[in-house]
Amino acid sequence: MPYAHRRAQLRATMAEAGVTHLLVSSPANRFYLTGFELHDSQCAESSGVLLIRHDGPDLLLTDARFRETALELLAAEQVVIYRRRTELATILHDAGVRNLWIEEDYLSVREYHALAQKLTLHAAPPLVEQLRQIKGPEEMDRLRAACALNHNVFAALPQLLTVGIHEAELAWELERRFREAGAEALSFPTIVGFGPNSAKAHAIPGTTPLCPEMPVLVDMGCRLAGYCSDQTRSLWFGRSPSSEFARALDLVQEAQARAIAILGPGVPAAEPDRVVREFFARHGVAEHFTHSLGHGVGLETHEAPRLATHEETLLAPGMVVTVEPGLYFPWGGVRWEYMVHITEDGHEVL
Ligand code: ZN
Ligand code: ZN
Image (cartoon, helix red, strand yellow):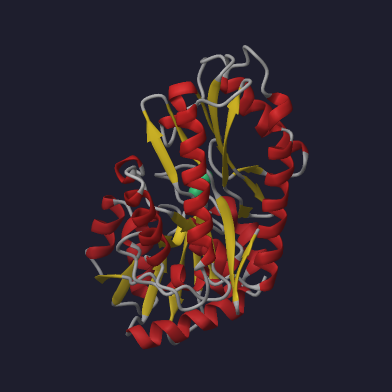
């Protein structure tokens, strides 16, 4: 992966934005720029931070557990080992930093206060996130592979639906298939909803058993070579779908087709969401579509850009977004989700 090239690109956008020193603490951003540790082991325990400087070598600041990994990725003079994260302020100050741009969503209050004692802090604009929106060829290969595996596992879903299986049992079986096919993890905990649970947008699989004549919703994805997939299917278990289910599925699939049809470079990311909302409103079901239409996918399951009402981004070649309209009712819900690659002359459904 072209990490040094990405850091050079970032430096150019920092210069335009007037950012001189950027502290990267988001794990996905840190990994994107260096290949170092895609995940922190838990929310309050960072594996390290990256300092991108406008005028000097970039520094990776981490603790001794990660020394060898860091030295495989960066030159020795770029790796700084700290004992405690609260030493960061002193280390950065000694390195000549006075103004520091921080990622507001990825710094604890404790760390913020420690840094603010010695440095002038500014909220960083989402410069790394903007770079990450446009996928390079190696990233597209990985996203395609993750998506292809998702299709394979979904192809087995109808056989796995048997009377009495619990939601959690099905979720585990799907996860096992992902892992046995080479995925290093799920991209998010699999959502399996039977019956009315299918209306919970983020249903946690439980002990609800599958019974005949029931809607089933499965939203799942895997992480393969770092990159995520994310797809949803809704189906009916039984002889014939209820009329409510059949109508909801028709509307959702038609809405999705209309949204995908307009995807291409230069289209405002809010536009497909608007098209779907208008279509649902014409059919009297607008209030049953309770989330945004889609989101970018890459190193994270949810990343920029969003296909949502207030999003101002224009779609551009190399972006990968989900298109996932859904309708939710007391009897259950329907969602259908594809991943779509924005190409030079339109789009490609992955
Ligand atoms: Zn999904
Ligand atoms: Zn999604």
